[in-house]
Image (cartoon, rainbow, N blue to C red; front, side, top):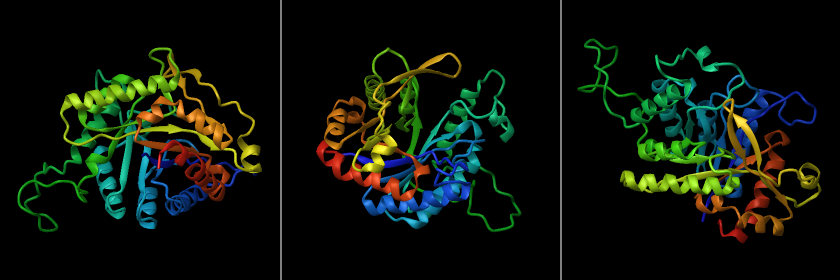
Length: 340
């Protein structure tokens, strides 16, 4: 059994072919799509975070709005770039959004990926410490945020406060019990997956990974998941971790599907470069008639290893079409593979 969620990058463009021509279109349709996903029986609504781009950025207003409009599905990110984040303010925002949602947030965070502008985090007021790289700074922010979610009191109160304080040191408010267990780390390598496991974060593995062995993407990703689980067990954590993988999956059901995705071109992994000269493998997409699609997906070892599947959706095609794609997967693919 798997949890199945959608993952939206939240693109918008003024192109007449796009159903999302403005930021307002994307934000409001993201809420509507989450409502439709819950109605269809999906398990989650996840959103990507990109700065300086015509895509979804600051996530917490959207997460809170989705939380207020839904009642069951998980609401998450994949992923928040921690190089841009103030851990203290983020802990307050996350606590508030989680309380609005009734404890349904699943926050994916990471040290970050190549961005739209050079050193964009500098414009947000952040600079690596002496001897740190920007990656180190992102991981430091992540660890600070993760620790703040313990709810530990740490700040000495003002002896003459505006409002009465409880006794002792103060913690950040609002505090949401249990949110710390619902933090995920987006890992592009086996080493960072092991690092996340030792800290006690869940694992998000996307459609790209550093090419560490030259094997097919799904083989490398499955090995990453096994390394994560082994490190989790060795660390002695008391709960069972969660693992998600992302995939582009489109059953060809009707003429719209064939027009949009029936031309192929996604059937093979691709090799590229990220972070300058670091070779990465980009996982294939899956597009076929339902029966053929099921047989192809059976061979994906990483999907088999994961407990959660994030389905990337073409949000610019509108809410109705994306609801159609999700329903097709839930009715023609999931049952045959035993996911639901």
